[in-house]
Length: 225
Length: 225
DNA sequence: CGGTGGGTTGAGGTATTTCAAGGCTCGTGG
DNA sequence: CCACGAGCCTTGAAATACCTCAACCCACCG
Image 1 (cartoon, rainbow over the protein chains, first blue to last red):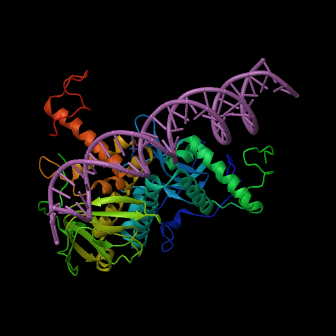
Image 2 (image 1 turned 90 degrees about the vertical axis):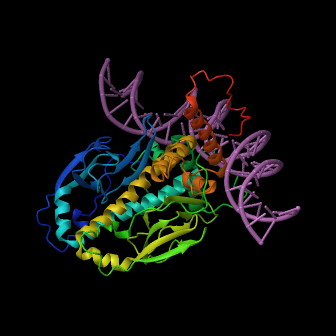
Image 3 (image 1 turned 180 degrees about the vertical axis):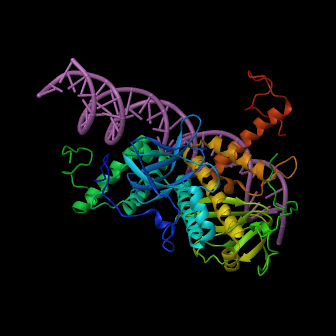
């Protein structure tokens, strides 16, 4: 259950025309593609924000760094997600490919041009920014007020909702990424992930009564499955 | 230093026409005013977002609540700030007056109408949402990765930048608010606030050399000043 | 003048971090 | 083919930053 995958996830639809350009048959928008190997930087914090990106395959993390190396991942971008959309001239996060990733990209400039004439596109720009804001707001609550267990549980639920590949949930990111997303250490994230995993396994099997069955001791797992 | 004030802060300029309507002499926008007593709710989470607000005098906190009462304040709104601006139909925070507060308010509907014709207004709507987003992103880093001392220091710096009344910083919010903003408990927030206060007092007096003068032992303060 | 609502401070408890070790998988090179 | 190291995950034990509980002070107010 929720094993980690390093290879590329299944294909998806999702075109960049989710900017709401169903109206016009996307005129002067150039739609390039690019691929990044695992761990490669897509753009850096403070760099000029010339492009807007959409994940075609793979997964991306975007984060801020403190001078001493502490890292806070603000969001994971999965297949279909749009990221790197800025209002100011610079990126406020660094974005990296978590696994081998290909992105579609459009020149931000051209997008803004379209937005000026097409109110629909402008509306979608705003609505995209708003959903980023909403996610950030929810994440503030998580980071400020939830316990480590609640954070990991919330993370698993979020991922379950977003990348329900089929039956099993295949997380593209490593423990360190999860920890840096949840404001925890790698070790606590790992500990609680396995704790939830065995709990869920129990539920899947047959809901043991509360004096737990002595035969299935959770700490003594000999079966590596 | 940074004492708390309960009475109303000094006057400010700041009109709601910071929506960028310098172009048109704000046509059909109705501009009402309303005042709230200390602690009163301005709007609640999940309530329909029919109005957009601007603080005329006073201060506002907007927060999310967990079912068991844990609270995360997402932002403080000070004189001149605009808040309650939503894209969806509902508010995502509860907003309360921290002190006696008067706000200006406009019907959101009318604002949207203007935005549809006036691209400048639409742009400003986006830019306002973006600065909310930026604040939330920075706050995620603070909540997820900074120590309690760093959080309190960051808070004081933020407030210093935003409400430099004159010389002294007069915080409108109580310790509990500060704590709930910083993801700490009331007690730690208080402890660190006074710790920073005495540190700053030292600096203001005469910058002691690094082997601190034995006469001024920080733990043995007999002078309550 | 007692009560209430902040604010401060201390002492003890605990959730989470830190430090450390070991296991597993996978790719590389002998 | 197997040894080897690197990267990742897991787990335990000790340390600690922060929280909890509790007391006290002070200003304000009916």
